[in-house]
Length: 148
Image (tube, rainbow, N blue to C red; front, side):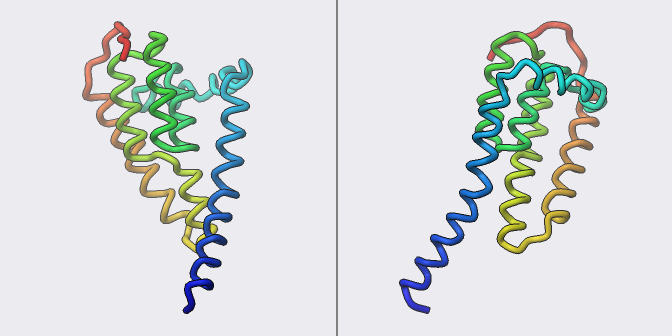
């Protein structure tokens, strides 16, 4: 295969990756500060509580799951500084995002490149939920919040 053909394939792959990442990032940036987004995340509070997370973790969780651990960590730092999350929640959300970050982005990227989405998504989500739920039950809950 010639160098020119390889460069052409690399450019095509780059365009496919950009076609997934850019719309996700722009959409999240536009939506993240809208008040109705936080209201829409409210119904998921029960599910979050089952894995040891409070309502304050919803935005950081959404950012990390959809866009990746770096972006999710940025939101996590903002949320923790605001005092809406306890040290326990910060730990559990960090654990969840380490295990299961960028699931939408990664799944779409691998699907575009020919991978099977179920094998990429399923094990990560199961491990993250199970690990958080287990540690959420084992770690003592405290009422204090802390700033990072």
